[in-house]
Image 1 (tube, helix red, strand yellow):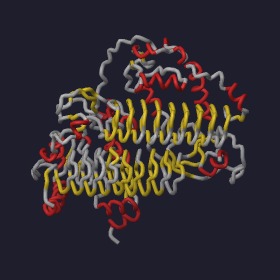
Image 2 (cartoon, rainbow, N blue to C red):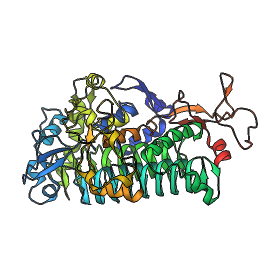
Image 3 (spheres, rainbow, N blue to C red):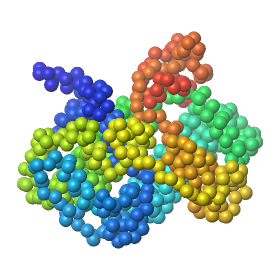
Length: 600
């Protein structure tokens, strides 16, 4: 047995090119790399995630003129000086031919330099949208209607100020929401109706301030409940007594603030399951549902045989992906766009679906056998947007791969990009803090620059605030339509790390929503509200820990008091697990067995 085979069987410890820490390539990983014919990665999983994420700008939108028709439009690109930026109508039209920008191969330049040359020529779509209506301020939107300042939304309608929303209707200020209707401040929830201010709620109705509750109705300030109705602070009441209990929380701003403080304490004293993994087999990560053999997966559902995935759904046999799904298979090191019904896609950025045997593709649709192409539709056997015959293509691709290995691209940090590496970070058209990398792995400007990333300085805001947040009415019943003319100051006044815009205005559907749901007006700008929701999400990282049931810490039992007998009796539970709760956090984290003994 040679050393290479031995390493494959036992796993291989590598040193990350980017952060210089050690990481392990597991035996099963080698099998996947052999299957898709790429060399093992030289970056650790975290750095690979960051490298992909800096190619996805969701929420930093700019106003510019379409490079084709001149129409004013909103764009994820700040200007069109680097490459043409087309409005959605022009980009999807037949007015331009992506093949007209094709480049001849240059064997005297590294291949990624040639990719950069192509990127600087081909028109880019201002916002990633397909089959979307009334969504001028939405990005990464598919099959939607009436979307406003909402991002990564699929098959939904009337979604406002939200992110990662699927198959839902009338959702506002929410995060990671699936198959829900008429909800507000719903985070990591699914199959809910008329729910508010809740975290990890599923199949719930007409409830507020729920943590980790399932199939509950008319419940308020509750945690770890199953199949309950008319509960307040986890105590059962009759209908009339329940309604009296919640009268003091009459949806005024002051009452909501009081309830939020109580909710924070309630969550701190509740049981936290080691991971929110539902109806899944042999899977690790967090916020997963209906998965099989998924490892290091976060915020996804209906995946099988997938590893290192974030915000992915309905995909199979993939590795190192984020924001990918809907019928995909054999996808590796790719980000954005769904890539619907694609197969064997390696190193993709914002592809639009229907790709087969594609590598280093960007913004392409229904193509087969393409290599390093941008914006192609219904093409095959193309390289750098230049058409070749099948025979020419099959001869050239192996030569390009050899060229990438013998003349690799080297960035300013000395990181080497051979074949099998994702696009170099410095080719991304976005600054680090414009992208989702800043949301998942936040950096200061100094840290970003040290690591070789660009960082955009905040723009100076000079809004003429006409109404300070402390002067807003306490209750929505005291608000009339004149509020739509006011410029409302954000409570944070730019003194936070949330990319605060310092002021905001309400739009008519938003005001209608608050009145319909009897909700007080917000006191924070959309960016600050977004980052407060992000703070409720666990990191994209796993730690090995022991169940805290009956575990002593400095001779003190953990905060939660069991209400049933567990299989380990009065002794500590010694079950271990992988969890996204860091060891230094204060929550009481249980294994699945102990958790189920208490809440199911």
